[in-house]
Each structure stands twice: as C-alpha cells, then as structure tokens.
Length: 479
Image (cartoon, rainbow, N blue to C red; front, top):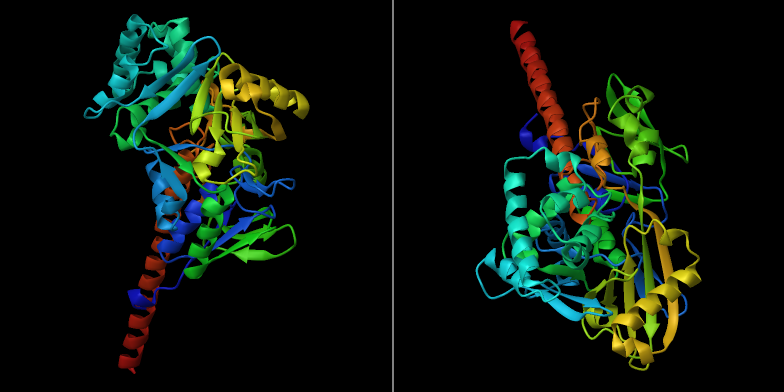
C-alpha cells in the first residue's frame, strides 16, 4: 500500500467543549476521521451562551476573558475562522474601582516589553510608592523562582507566596488578589501558587500583545462551537449532540469502541475523553479507575462561578470592563459597549462576575442580584440613578476544579495505561489554572498523541501489507 493510499483512522472525542472541539479540529486537520460525541443537546461544555427569553439577547453562561498569551486558544479560533469574532485591547488596561478609593488603572506604558507592565505597576495609584516598588520586586522574584523550579511553588498557596514576598494587605487587596481569583477561580488562601505564577509569567512578562485582554464580541456558542463543527465536517468528520458515552470497550489493552447510552457502538482506532473528572472516571475501565492518579479524579473538588446579567435603562460603567475592590462583585463588563448589542431606549447590558463563589452559590437568585446591584451602585455613580430593567443569575456550581496545591498533585496527564486512550480538559495537568487556554492546550496535546499513535498503526499496517505482497510475489515467482 502506498503512503498516499493510507487508510483514514477513526478517533472518537468524548465531549464537545473547548478541549473536545480543539482536539477534534486538530485531528481533522491531520487527516483523521473524527467523531465528536457530546452528551448534552448543545455544544460548549462549561463555556456556552443562550438566548434570554425576555429580552431576546444572547448571553453567556458567564463572562469569559482571554489574554494575548492564550496562544493555543487564539490559534484554535484563527484555525476555525473565528478571529474576527474577538476584540483585542490595543494595550493592557484594567480600571480598578473602589467605593472609597475611586478609580485607578493598571495600564501599559509606551515602553519595550516587559517594561510596559513595570510602568503600569509604578503608575497604579491604589498602591503606595513603597508598595509599587515592592510589587515589582516580587514579580522579579517570582520569575526567578519559576526559572529554577523552586519547590515552594508546588506546595504553597497564593496567599503563602504573597506573604513570602512581603506583600502588604493593601497590595494584596487591590492588586494581587483580584488577579489570583480571576485567573485561578479560587481564593488566594486556597489557590495553588504554581499555576498562578505561570499566568503571571506569560501574561505580564512576555510581549506587549501577551498582556492584552481579548474578549468575544459574540456569544460564546457562536464564537466557536458552530465553526468548529463545520471545520470538522468539511474534513470528513462529524459532531453528534445527545450522544452520551456509557462505556469504553477494551480489547487486548486498547479501546476498540465507544458504546453509547442509546445502544450504538462507535468503533475507533483511538479515543480522547474530555468529560469532567467524575464522568471521565466513570468511563475508565475499573482496573485503571482504581489506580492513581485516576482514582483521585473525584477528589479534585469544584469551584463555582456566579454570573449576573443586568439590563439598565442607561449606561452605567463608562468603560468596557472594570474590577471592583472591597465588594462581593469582582468584575463587571459592559456587554453593550463590547459587543455592540444595543439595549432598547439607549440602555446597557452589564455582566458581573463572582469567581470562587463558594458562599454566594448557595444564595437565592434574588439575593445575588440585589448584592451585585448594590455593589455597582457603590462603585459607579451612574448606577445610583439608573433603573434595573431585568436581572438574570447564572450559577455554574462546577465551573472549574478547585485549583489548590493538593489538586495540582492529583491532576492527571494526557496519557493512560491504554496506549490509544488519552485525556484532555482544563482539569488535566497543563501547568495552567483551569482556563480556556488550558482546555485548548490539553486538546491539542491529546490530539498530537492520538495522531502519533494511529499514524504509527498505519505505518505498521503498511509494513505488514508490503511484507505480504513480497511474500505473494515470491510465491508466484517460485512456481
């Protein structure tokens, strides 16, 4: 068999979120037959959008922000033709608002990287002069610790790291903690220092573009799910929704098929599972599920995110997005400005985010909305006279794993004892917090491993065919 006639190998991808669709796209681009199996009746996993019944406006299950250092995520969006569906900041700029402090910005200065971020810190007015110098020195110390792989980073929390670096309570409150909570979706007292440091290094000590914030200008589902599905279909694959995997069939130490809840059987040459940790463990053969690290998947824990979408009768933020200091609400985004979706009567749609919302997730929706409205009134003067037209509260109880030092030690890699079964998802061992970038990175990594495995199978098949053909020719010649 000639290499040009090499048979296409089928790879099943269980899960249709960022990790699963990224893996599917990468495999399809490599010429493999891809079958993406999503249990729900929609794609997107924990990053999706829906249409609000009352307003008809598409809203996300939670506001997601990326950064220029999200190289895998942005390359994935570019690959599927979604580059024009995001908007980039021209330069890093984050306004931080406090009820008693007013507003101050962390804004890049016109200087070569990484001096652009150093200048941003040195001009941040919520820090004293001494705190600014100390924060800059802390950043340099963190880089050195990362470079030498200091074991302290593997066992410490963010709060312990900041204490070691001598950061004041005020510096933690107005700078470090907002960064930690938004990137790790965990409180500084619980969040692992290692992934936090990795984000700092990539975002703030890279290029000017790395520090830019990148926002979807459309709903999350429109951003990537449909385009990824089309990309896979155009290359001979398929994406199925409502296709719940129930068991992996194992034959001679390999996955031979994925059995679906409806009784169908999908024969495969390799399989990538991107389901959440507990669902992934349920699919694994018992002999694997009972071994470390896979037996610990249910111990990774979860950290919730609560989002509140508010429709006002007028603009209230005065900026695309802002951080809030000293309030329950951590960040607020003016979706009308960012996405250009007008609100009837000249109003605005604001999306507020409460990350690591362990307590707030238990509140009733009326209380959540009331607290967020109060926070915005305390910080933004225009919100004090504005009227709230509608409020929608979305609770993602299992938004991410709880990114603690203990969880870092338990997060599994992409490979498993079965040589054609691989794992992906923002909860796997990516070295990053559970983010969109981590999800896409894991999908790319699993796809590369699966592709190498099935291409190796094809090479073995070709060699066997050539051996058989040679034997047949020899047999004919001997007659």
